[in-house]
Length: 354
Image (tube, rainbow, N blue to C red; front, side):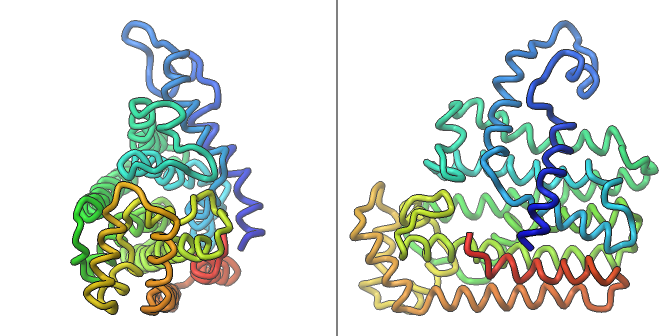
C-alpha cells in the first residue's frame, strides 16, 4: 500500500495545485471565482488562503482518500487520470477539517510542527479551513468530467448530506470533550466516528460511484465499505497515539500522550472506564479533564489502558470493522487488481505503524 500511496501522492498534489496554485494572482482569481466586482487583493488572499493551506499540505499526509477514489474509478472500469480533479475533493475537505479541528481541540502540533492556527493565527486558520469545505464544490461547477446536469446535482446533494453529518460527529466529539464525566456508550462513540470520519470516507466512495454512473446499489455498497474502513482508521489512529506514547518515541508528529493531554474520549477510554475500579475510573476522568498533565499522570493513564485490556479491545474492534468493510466489496463487478488493492487498504489502515 505504501508503494501505491507514494506513486499517487505527487499526482494528487499536482491536481490540487491546479485547483489552488501555490501563488495566486488576479487571472487565477477571475478564472476560478469569477471577475471581481471591484478589485481583488491577490496578496491578501495569498496570505489568508494559499499560504496556510499549502503549509499543511506540504507537511505530509498520505492522500489515501484521494487514492481510494482513484482505485474505485479504476475498479469501475474507467480511466483514473480523467477524474483526478474529483479525487482532490475529499483530500481538500479532509485537510480543511484538520485545520478547524485543531482550533477546536486546542491542538499544539500537527504533522510534527506547530498547528496552523499557531503559525498564522486563529482567524486566518479558521477562514482557510472553512474555505476548504467550499473550494471542492468549484470542481463540480467547472465540471472537468463533462457530467450531465442530473449527475452534477446528485454529486452536490451527496456532498451537502455527508458534510452536514460530519458536523454532527464533530459536535458530539466537542461536547464530550467539554464534559468531565465519561458516560459515553460504545455505540455513541462509533456513531460519532461514522459521522466525523466515516462521512469523509463515504464522500470518497459515493463520489467515485456518482461520477462514473454506477447504480444506487453499487454506490451504497462502496459507501459502506469506505465508512467501515474509515472508522477502523480512526480507532487505529487512536491506538497509534497510545502505542507511540508508551514507547515515548514522539513519532507521528504528536507529543507524548497527546490524546490524553487533550482530554480525548476514545474507544479505549470508554473500555477502560467500564472495566476499571470506580476509583481508577474517577482518576482517569480527572486526568483527562485537567488543564495540564504531568508525565507521571500520562504514564498512569496509559498503564490503565493496558491493565484493562483497552488497547487490545480497540485493536480487535478495528480489525473487525476492517473485515466488515471488505465484505461490502464482495459480489461487486469490479476489476480484479484495483479490487484487491481496495481490500488491502482495509488492512493497511489498521496495521500501519505511522
